[in-house]
Length: 342
Image (cartoon, rainbow, N blue to C red; front, side, top):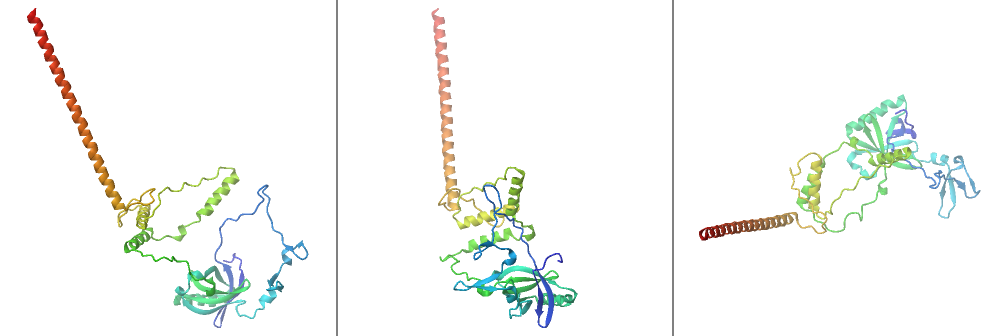
């Protein structure tokens, strides 16, 4: 952890106990960054900072902070002004309470940090706080100041370290008004059973096995363009008809999930094939029945036709044989008659 640059130095205030710490980021972004370029020649696009009064470019060292009043007046605010704020959290993470972890709404979760013990004197009180959090099965709620504002935080144990999650203030979390469907919807028990079956089939996942496929695809595109090779082709979207029946969609999802895990599709739930390319498909059982009846009728017709053809051929063969036999008898009679006349 020593190689990670700290973003804030201060102390944890735990009653009368003070624990010197350094605040370091607990997460890092692996997203791919792009530069803005001029599409005609590939030149970099850069932004320059100008002073509107002097109409000249200024350096970073000349830039400070200012608050714009309602009438447009700019009130300069210096770092010294902010460092002398009359609040105890300016350089202190002040623990104000200990609560069960489930009291924290995940919607309030913000950035995550590690609290690193600063120096040998911090080792004992740091370990004391860590072990107290472990034994109580609670998290600590604290207030601290960072980047020009006071914030709320939650301290918890991660391995052998203390981590702090920044929390949004309760009034910064919007109520979910107007988000849920307005219509009154009734969910049947069978639909819930199928949803439960789908959840059970999908099961759990080791988060370590998940990765950013979009980032990997972008890296492949960049590598191909750099090497002057053809870009990888996107896979064809899976074809399929619209699923308008919720039960059919759930049954199909359960079947697909089980097949992907090498299980038999019909082990625990009845799965029916979905209609393809129909805007108003009939119920699966009725559709199956009609298809079966139609198939039987068609087969019966084919059998009857085949029988008629066979009978016709047989009849024709019999007539031909009889005709040949009659012709032979007639020829024999004529021959005998000729011999007698001679």
